[in-house]
Image (tube, rainbow, N blue to C red; front, side, top):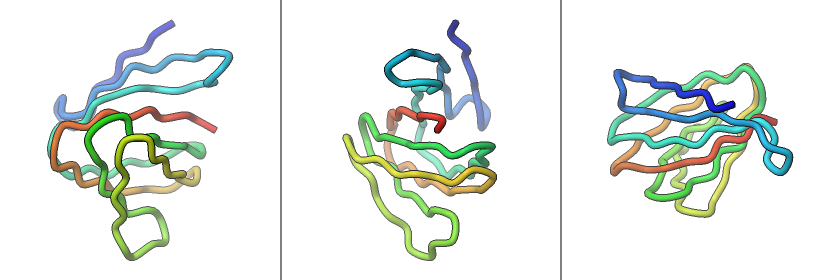
Length: 94
């Protein structure tokens, strides 16, 4: 079953799903902007297109991730994103 989600006044939209090869996941698109997300469980974020500039929990330096690159976010934490152009992602819930 697909689940549609919308955040930040429609600037971030995702579709959640579950499959045998990926597990529980969502795919989405972010418009230009700055966002802070909280996690309930660990996540793996993979950039599909565009780029995500990310400040991970406990880090002081921002890092940029481009298509094909992934980063992990611990559960029960927050991470910050800066998006300069519309960007797509795959989020796997670990």
